[in-house]
Length: 126
Image (cartoon, rainbow, N blue to C red; front, side, top):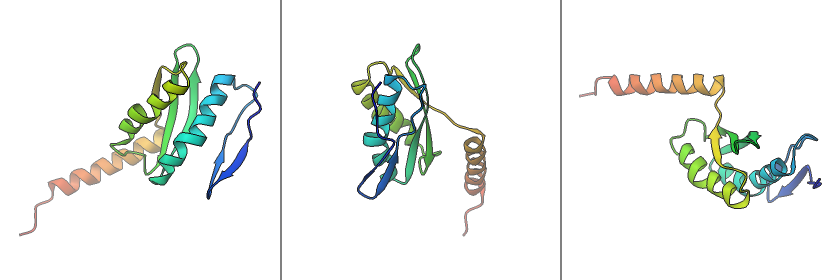
């Protein structure tokens, strides 16, 4: 098994690869690629991206977007055009990247949608 560092500093950001003894070599490489190449770019825009799960049989990688990326219309483009392409280039086992949303994300989105609808339907001032 490859022995990856658990924490290191790069510029002013702290990158932490949370590894588990159950992680196989593919998952360790996914986590390393996320922390060294992908997360810094996403963090520059006020967001973050976290590893959730990888299914070796299907090749599906599940990630969670956080911060400014939550509910952002560009997050799906970031996942497909950016993250998925990079993952597939370096890790051929990755066939598809999916965004995972939890109840908090869905609640935030529904509140945002309600406020947006209210703003759109208000009469315009004269």
